[in-house]
Amino acid sequence: MKTEKVYYSDVNCRMAGAKVLEILPCKDNSDSILLVLDRTIFFPTGGGQSCDLGEISGLKVTDVTESGEVIYHKISLEGNSDINKLNEDKIHTLSDKLGISPGSEVTLSIDWERRFDNMQRHCGEHILSGIFYKLFGGVNRGFHMGEDYLTIDIILEDKPEFKEISMDMCLQAELMANQAIWDNLPIVRRIFDSREEAEKMPLRKALAIDEDISIVTIGDVNDPADSVACCGTHPEFAGQVGMIKIYKVEPNKGMFRIFFEAGKRALLAYDKQYEVLTTLGKDLSAGVPDLMDKYNARNEKNKESRDRLYNLTKEVLRREGEYIKTLLNGSDNNPCLTYNILTVDDIIELGRSLAGNINSMLFLIHGPSNTIFLFSDKHDCGKLVKENATVFNGKGGGNKIFARAIFTRRDDLESFIHAVNMLIKE
Image (cartoon, rainbow, N blue to C red; front, side, top):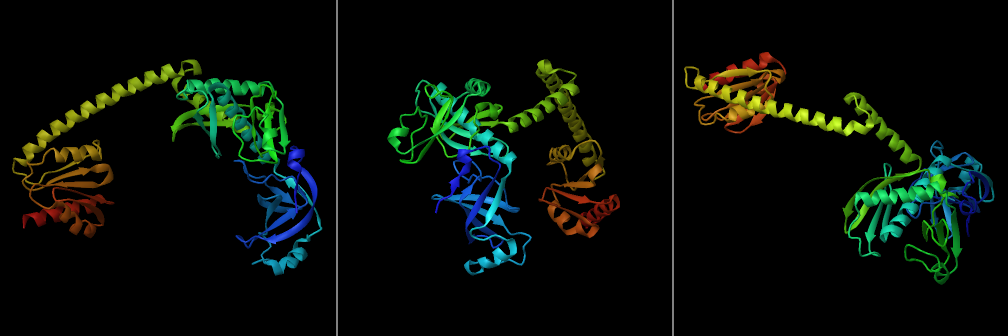
């Protein structure tokens, strides 16, 4: 049994007819079946490219796979709840319910937007990989089509003068790759029966198979933008890729991982990025050419403000610490102070700076959050919080010399303070 691959002979075919050869149960999902057809326009997952999706006579195709020369179309039976736990003996039930059986004629329809998106991105990877090989002797050892970007892993092995891939090198490759798109180079798929015949092509990568070899070439075979073995679908001309945009490059396991996007997705990503630039430009009253100057100037001003705030806070904490020391040395053995401007971290720093001076207890309150901090050189702060905070609808914890408790109501916080004062006086 063999499935004719229409997507190779006519990559632009969006609808077609076919005959059902076999209906199989899907072992991993009782709500799905597998259809085998005499021909198909559905590309199966392979070569780093995801499969086509769509419909077969109104039934939803959720996955397409290939085994040998046969292509299997996974059909969802969701909505046909009376067909469940399908097995070999119940295939006739399916025929009755869905109106298809071996020998039936069906209509195929692919999700063209998904197919074209895959072709743009896959072909963009071909072009960029070919250019890295041509310019720097970089060989593609890995390819991934992610939702937010594409990646290729390039190893520098054919031109020893290059030791690393910089962003400047990436931009050079990006420009040359886009030039191939602007030149609208033809994309041709050739089939070879043997490795010996296929290796006469100007391949950028050694072959891994010996027969029925598909070589995809972009541009003139004597000086192509790319030429490599590939089983995926590609547009007829490079111009259909639209554009390629590299985002970044980073070392990865002895190679260099290039992050990029191609086709419509590259344009949409650029639109989002430009929208951010436009928003920043309005905020900074700057155009794109002088945006970085304005941005750096604002950052410098913000840094000066942060430094000034830091120094002022340190001075406030120093003075407040000196003031609290006078209270600790006075008649008030358990001072309680509330702060509405200082942050929680400021208050903790203030309390800890007084270690060794707190004969009994120091209460410091962060007003906005109803958080109280206990500091002591004598009493077990953590124990006091653990045993009493929940009594007043609070929660918290800590250690012997420092603890905190948080309350929803100020009245509960004050009741907690009164209780602790009574306990440590006993």
